[in-house]
Length: 264
Picture (cartoon, rainbow, N blue to C red):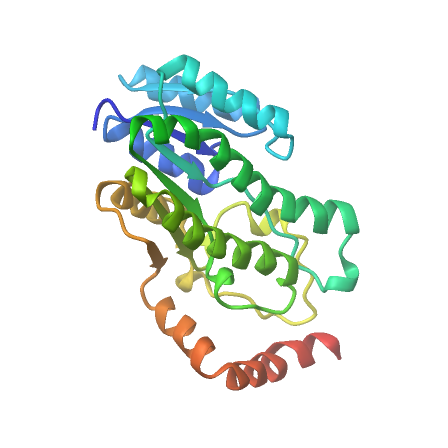
């Protein structure tokens, strides 16, 4: 494992940061990116001081030129990228008519989906040349279940799930693995930046929320034991199944239990 290089996006906090820390403990070399320079610098300083190897490059991944620069810098630093963890993303969880067309809709699709596609495309030539690699895309249970106020976020995550499936079938011939990680609610800065406005007190109970470290451990385990997809926590698999088999029932539950209360 020591000679494996991980490129992790969105590594300045939450799932990305937790994944980077666990990866460093396992002996992986890291190239991390996000927009917040200070946090990336602190993360890399800590990893390097503990005997690991971590390099950062601050970037806005909605900019294609910066995506290409990140991949180029990572290859200059290490000569290869064994694992790409596409984690960067955000959500604006409001009713569709309340979302800003550019900042909330276009930017959300850009970062959550298009940037993932562009970054993956940029790393593929070297992985194909090396006849191996692993692309791990951090999706969401919202990629299976459409929830009111999650319309654009769900669109990006449903799209990412389709991308995972098609890409896996494209690149498997080169020995490249593609995995999707589908967490339920995670206690990170995501909710603080989502612009959530509720009339009622409806929210995910704290005891049902994952933390970033749990997801980070799952990602490292996925690197060591590849699978096509991982839904965490495991019981969310049942929620996905119910939504697929009984969509009308789920429609009624969400309408009565959430939408009507919020729209009154």
